[in-house]
Amino acid sequence: MHKFWFAALAALGYAGAALADPVEGLWKTAPQDDGSYGFVMVAACADAICGVLVKGVNAQGETATEGGNLGRQILWDMIPAGDGRYDGGKVWSPDRDTTYASELILDGDLLHVRGCFLGICRDGGTWTRVK
Image 1: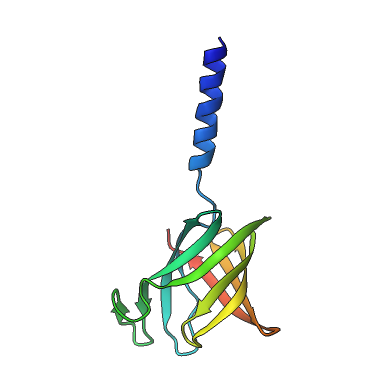
Image 2: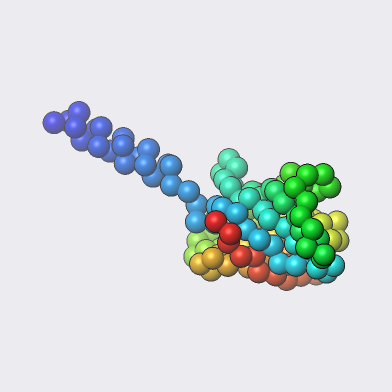
């Protein structure tokens, strides 16, 4: 009987470890100052959350799937803080080529992004979940 309970608890432990963080997935960014936007794949990286730019769309609607900033990590070291909040990490803004201390707030299929640099904070807009 002890073997049964041990196996059941071990299975539950593995199932819990396999559960994805709710923020993981593909997100469409808010438009930048020039009207372009991107698609960011957000996933776990070690004990944090990170995001990589996987596709870009310019102001004319032309899609880029290679070159430029594609494949660049633009979100890193975000730590879940509870209640859909993530902080302690950084976000890089391609339109300003600036890295900001960042905070994320997950609200269903919306991700509110905020960044601060030298005490000046900028609303990074709201990202929309693609999948």
